[in-house]
Image (cartoon, rainbow, N blue to C red; front, side, top):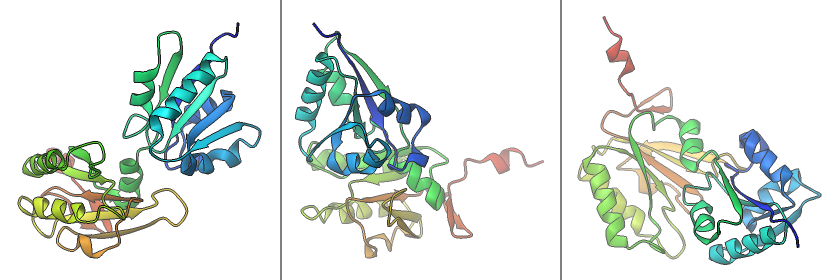
Length: 247
C-alpha cells in the first residue's frame, strides 16, 4: 500500500518566476505532478521541464480537485496551482472542502492580481480596500450590486476582478454608476491588463472616463477613495502618515 502524498495548493502570482515566492517555487519543485487550468500550467511549465503537468479547462475546478486528491492517495506529491493567491478566487477553498483528514494539504500564498496591479500603478491600495468580483456565475448579481453599493458608501478603495467578458458586458457600467453615486467623477482609476505577464499594459484614468478604455477578463480595475490622487503619473491613496508627523 502506497504512503499518501501531500497536496500543495500554490499561488503562483502573475506567473513569472521572479514574481513567485521561494516557497511557491519550492513546493512545485518538491511535487511529482503540477495540476492546474491550462493557462496557468502554461505559465510555469518552462521552469519544470521534467515534471508531469496535468492541465484542464475552465469550469472543471471540482473535477480538478478530485483528481488531485486521488493522485495524493496514490502516493504522489501534487501542486495544485492558481494564479495570484490560491485563497483569493483560487483553488484553496475547493481543495480544502474536498480533502479528507488522511491527506495533508498546505496552502501557499502568492502575489494577488490586486497587489500586482497596484504596484504597477503606484500605491492605490495604501488604505482600506475591498476586492469584488463582477462574475455572477457563482454569486447573484443583486448581491454583487449590494456589495458595490456598500463599498462605495464606506469610501473603500475598490479592486474589481472579472470586470467584463464576452457574455457579460454591462456589469462594469453598472458598477461605475454605483460608484459615481458616492465618489467624485474625478476619482483616480487604474486599469491594468495582463499584470505581471507578457503584453502588460495599464492606464491611469478617472471614474467618469474608465469605461472608455479597454476592459476584459484579463483586467483589474482599481477605483480610489475620496482622498486618492495622482502624482507623476502614479496613483496614491494616502494613509495619513504625512499629516501625523507634521509639527
